[in-house]
Length: 469
Image 1 (cartoon, rainbow, N blue to C red):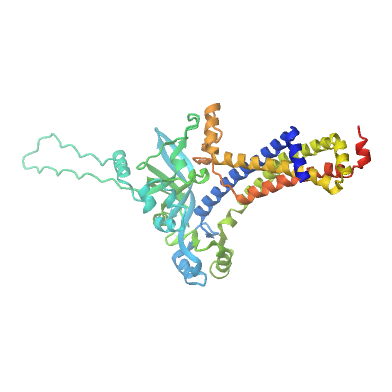
Image 2: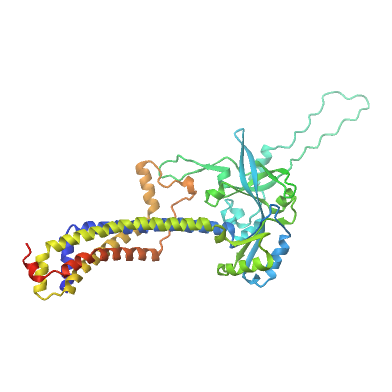
């Protein structure tokens, strides 16, 4: 009992211990906030990549793709792994150029042109939920909304009726018939990435949400230039914007455009061919088994590449994991600094309390008992610092977007640049395991830092300690 009382008394009377508590608290809070924010970014990135790429991806190694994708999907469905497959869809992916006019100027930029069956692609996931038109989210298609069709007709009106001639007719001359007005050809619809059709206002009011300024409206026409699949001859066609694709990832929103699969196959003279097949599984835990079977029986290596979405994005996911680990290691040094503070303060306490330690030992306190006092003192500092740090870190993480807006209003400058990630708010993901590990590490450092002073106090000779001046 006396050990606990002495630990508590030292805590209340030694105000230098407050510096150790604050150091541990700030270190724990910083680690929790950083882990939660990086975990949020990592989780959101993985969700986006997983949705856009499907569970398993079969890609052709040749430029013109492979023939008869429907027959190949039927073979997969009828095989022994068909029980694991929930949905499949073929796609045609090719690089292209898009052109459109903005305020009289022609804008040309490279894009990633993807031909999809909207219903089949929606069954895979990562498509319909990213369309901005609510009707397309329910029933995805490339149909033009009425407003978009009206806008296109306004920009491309039918040819005006020919004015009747004022020349008088000759006797017996038959008047010419009225000309039939020509009907404009309605191009196919195209879904363009949100960052292609718009740009972010880089100078919003502090604390205000960055607005998208659209330069392409539904109903505006664009020109797509690509090459045919076999002759590699250039092919050009006109499309009309019917919707936007907004995944909140600038890499995709600034490069992806979607067109009807059958029309792109016809345009590239590659009818009944595809460059990839996306497969969604009922349970992703069977992905390795599915990939192994497909490589062995359906899509042999060399002509095809079969891989999971994690394998395809392995380098990016590995880079995120390494960056997160290195950052945690560096930030853990903050708690290490607190440990050295505990070591210094405890060493000073042992020197100041030498006579008290001698009195305790003369009254019967054992070496183990004296050592337990200082170890308990270090653990008490660690517990209080870790507890306060956990509370502070969780509070900051929970209200981090409100804090960011307050600081933006205070400084007049956005801290979280939404033009980089196209996220509306800072994503967070509080992981209980990570919080427990941070607290355990802080307690371990606090206890380890108090071991050396505790040993020194325990090994003091009672007589020499009493004679210490």
